[in-house]
Length: 390
Image (tube, rainbow, N blue to C red; front, side, top):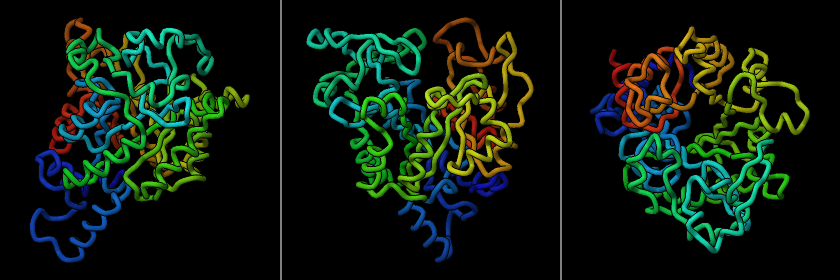
């Protein structure tokens, strides 16, 4: 695994990437690379170079660049690349009725598409229990791919992002296979390896419906030659058993997502496993995760908790504890708008107004995290530039 101590070597790469220069290998000079170094660079470009090739802290475009475009659309994914994101979270994977994987934040699509405007689908509206929560709306597993392709994406949180509603209706729902093809096309077009970070969503729920996600993910990764240790595809899930299943199917880097400390992964609930996330982030729990995954994706509150007033308190030992067992940390999610920032970084009270996101990024980077998911890749990259040069 990449160690935290390798930061110094990768910082030069990060700065050059931010300046729009070609990304060179850790420690490589801008000009006059030796033959061996050039060969190493060629291999990195060909294979994706594995996790070690990513700048640190890594800036991960959350559902693309959803601070500026409706999430999980090619408009959002492309802009993330245009703004310089190191990795694009493309996408959250849910299945269709006929077994295709598509990119949506949740299987319920009433909040992220214009399905409510389609009278032909009015009868599909229903209430289901999703991971223990009654949820009303329209669900991807009740639609064929052809039917979903007639829909268009809309902004999920218009109260915070009214400017994003300008783009409502412009883009369709991407499939995971389309994302894999897009990744190759953009890599060729941009002359730089594009990385993606897909997530299996509600895998236990879908397995019970006969729509297992992991096998479908693995089949597509194998089809496109992206199922290897150095493939530029990091896989993530909130359910540890989904990551364990993927670990047996593919060799990709794997990350266990971690919600609030008192929460329980839904696969644990279904299996009667009493452990909570608090148990998973103990030294023992982290050692267990390190046996089948390369990283964790904790909520930012597990890195620095907040007090009752929403202000940051003292950082936990999670970063050091995870690094001790060889795990990287990619916490989530940094957003620029006031409601999503710690209280001390808010400016005014506007729900769609930006606070001091740079101050918040700096505080989280200082904990030693290896990267962060953000809805605003450009802000993250500038914050990293400040941090690396600071």
